[in-house]
Image (cartoon, helix red, strand yellow):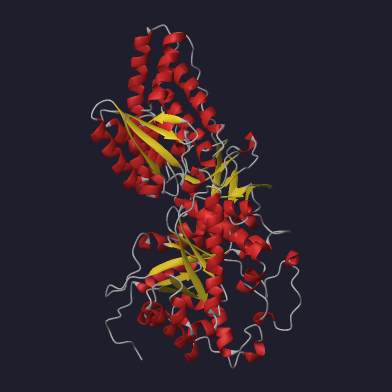
Length: 86
Length: 544
């Protein structure tokens, strides 16, 4: 399993729209992507409502992990997505 | 005549018959006669059809209310692909041998309840979205077209509630206005109505006997008159005609840039004195709010408004402006604007007295409460902060330091914030003369020409005896303005005018030649000013 941590800089956090983009991006990868918050709550990145339910705000640090498939490529793609969008 | 009140979404008048709309109760049987596979296939087909409808709505909304406000329908489409949602529907079909209609309705209610229970206000509001999409799928399943809510006749629609999709679907050529029992002035539906320029009232306790009766929505006074007296009706018709004239101007100028014939573009923003004016700002297509007079919050209050009270208000304005700039001027109280609980002493010379930034820098807790509220609102759009009545560099530094303190405190609390542009009002001769130094401290200047004129000419404009001496185009004032614009530009500041002179059309060309970047005027003055700007040619020699 590969993973990285990221602190959200987008002022709105992961609200509906970026959550939608995240789901799209995660679905395109062959690894299972999971987003975990510091309080232990986590959700698969392919599930829109579950991601929205995490209520991730600006300033929060999340751990993104990739399991199975081409983990290196998946985690690199996710890292780029977070930097560009969140 | 009967009068009912509610919360107004838009300052406008609508006149027409009322039509009460009741959502059709969809009777769905729980037990299916089909196999679970067949039911799920029905569901899946309906879901795809619903997504197609939503894609169509997205395009319609994009056209009518812009990308930021249309995005909700894209999210709706994605919600219908959500794995958990799909699994829940499937689970109910399989385990309960249920119909697709029943499974979707139940799933919608369950998910909506989960969102409704969240602490976060934004996520709570998503409960309505989940219900909305579920209802859409059920309607496809039952073959029920969304009924024509207006029955093909122009009318004021009356309903318990309207979803965003219902609002966008309505035939705008027939929709005169709408009235709902529920819904907040903050909801998506309200924002859409505002953007589409439809007079509307929410929170109105209507009764069924209103159906078909002639009524007037008076958005300016937040009320509806049912079967109005002839005199009132005529007055409202007059008012509506005035609005329509403005609207006609809007249609020809909407979305057009404020650009001169020779290609110089400037920004035209609007001044607002309370949160309700935001509707007018959008209606008149201003590119932002150039002056948000925050003191009304204090003047309307019996005691110091709390951080949360202020935050919610700023947030509402910022969200409604959907990314367009909102410049909040910090508390400008004192002189002619008094609130009892501030317990300000009577002064010999209030215009030169204890007011604005002078109060804020000595009563720091009041100031910091406001700054924290502004910083919190900055997470929801584009916010600038502007300090009034500045006469020295030290004041600006002190105010900025307090702003930084507040930012640090909020960071500690884990609160989301955005970048906040910092500027000052230039409204004293001292600030004009120090413009070069002040420009090093901030990102923009906004010229407050009313006070600047009064302080430069030493004339109290309330005193009619001085009319002979007073000249609103006094060369000293114009030179002050020119100097400020040039000094600002030397140091990378943009410079705007938010005082009355900004809307003075006889000076617009002069200001443009000075290089002004922005004019902020009352919402109603935005389009006339745009019209003028678009007719100017700065490459030609100015007429003498």
